[in-house]
Length: 390
Ligand code: NIG
Ligand code: FE
Image 1: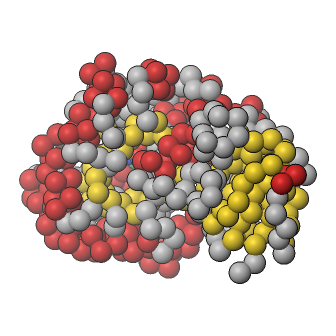
Image 2 (image 1 turned 90 degrees about the vertical axis):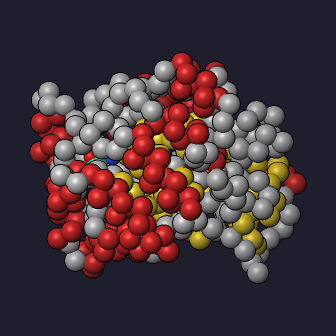
């Protein structure tokens, strides 16, 4: 098999503390990397690199691990720009707009949904995302949730059943009936296409008992739990996620001291979604408070047509640094290693020997430019499992 040498890397972030400068970023200067069979085969100083058949010269640019976007809702139809404009004029976000997207998604043909999803997926990759998680949740019927997950599973193995997104209009007078459907027939139809189970635990969506019932049923069906919680106010989401051993609790825009303490002693990652805080003009969580308490933090886009029509992980990094008190290094780590941890993956989010060759070359001398040059096309080239994209 052909090996390729990436050499003359001005600054290489490996996320392997045993490599390079000893920091958590495992940073090497004047570095090189060899990839073979879609994985990293060698990392070290450029001067010591082995000879290979193929060679790519980074011309002193920075190289970082591909971004892991561990929270998106990429499969949907339609858009809600009018709702966004109304919010920017002072309307609050209530989650009511989810029904609009559910209507558009149910009405869309498979080919239309598939083409839209692939377009958004290509957009994420062009901005450096090499692994993406995708949730259902805009179908809310047995057939529509299953087809959303089928389409999602064509582009990623990280698929999440979110039948418990909101109670659809036709069940407005029968919440218990809808929860029973989600835990029964809908779960059975969706589980073959899903790795994870999720619920939106929030006032206006599902309460603690309902969310517990859905996650417990998902676990019994062989799925692993994650949870939307504490997005619009304080609530039981974080506690419930920790109680159920969820890989991640996502949003965390409102956190009590007890929530932070519960996360600190747990294996649950706090996934922060600054695109949603931006787009609903909500408060950004204080990531410093979580990091200083020893909590594992990830950042992700939450790409969806309502609260965060965003595919750019570099923008999430910039917002995390400017608005959430993370250092540029912490934000990059949260967008790579943190996302991998939130998906319980060890083969991605790092560039050590054996890791998947998910590589982002920046058009910049340092990873700091991801936060320092918001809006600029800092991502220069992307490789997924050793294959160049775009
Ligand atoms: O993660 N919080 C719940 N669900 C999505 C938003 C859904 C929508 O408004 O369409 C989110 O923010
Ligand atoms: Fe979400």
